[in-house]
Amino acid sequence: MPKSVSKTIDAIELLKNDHETVRDLLQKLTETTDRAEKKRKDLLEKIAHELEVHTTLEEEIFYPAFRDAGGKEELKMFHEATEEHRAVDELVLPDLLETDPTSAQFAGRAKVLKELIEHHAEEEEEEMFTRARKLFGDEELQELGERMAARKQELA
Image 1: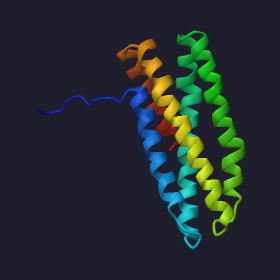
Image 2: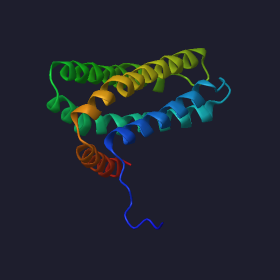
Image 3: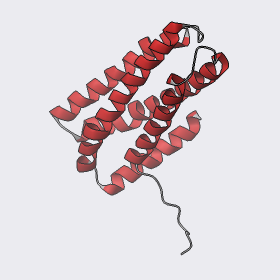
């Protein structure tokens, strides 16, 4: 059966795909040794870019829509998720970017980044995205996904 209309991805699937990309990169990073200086630098650069794009999509488009569609519980989730982004963006990631990739500290800091990101992604997937599926209809999630995909292209 020919595909004449390309299926667009909904907002939640787009964000989950981003989570998987970052999880994969973080896994590769934490498996490197202190002798893999170039590989560590390259992976960290990719991770930083992926996180910047992903965070922008969530904070500009998805989170405000989620917050506005919900009530007190969604507002609480919105603030918690935003603060988790801030912790990574302002503390953990800049610290890791300035750490010598051949040092023992690098491995420890990379592991902390990985654990924070995994915790954040898991909470979003299990709690926030589950609630979002109930708050938004399929059409709304598709429209959000289209807006996010367009913005992602701009940031690429």
